[in-house]
Image 1 (cartoon, rainbow, N blue to C red):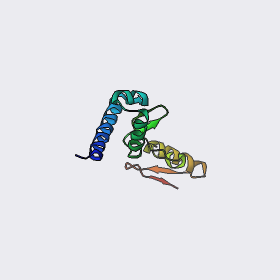
Image 2 (cartoon, one colour):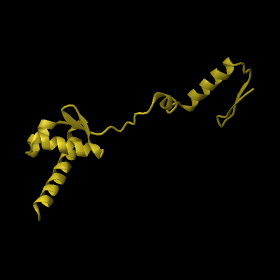
Image 3 (tube, one colour):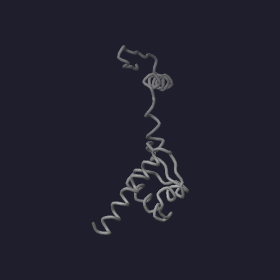
Image 4 (cartoon, rainbow, N blue to C red):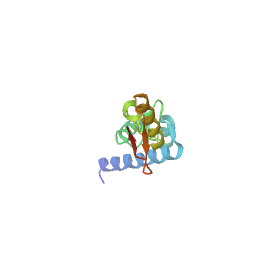
Length: 115
């Protein structure tokens, strides 16, 4: 096995160890990873950058943690995502009643008609 192949295999093993350690601990300081894996802090930072780019871990100041499962979307797109059907109906009633609707009919299927 060539030196380059051994180096790649060692890096892959180190990456697997980093991801496993982060999954177990939740957050791990860079210095602790370097100590546990017996490599330099610079080597860990290089590995962390690569793993972060792959989405396997997230970089934080001084350490690494699990990637966020929350997608950050704008408020205007997010504000209607979690509205319950009952709340939507109440909002629609309020909106139409405020704008002069005098009669509202709701069916069993939750369809609402405004007249």
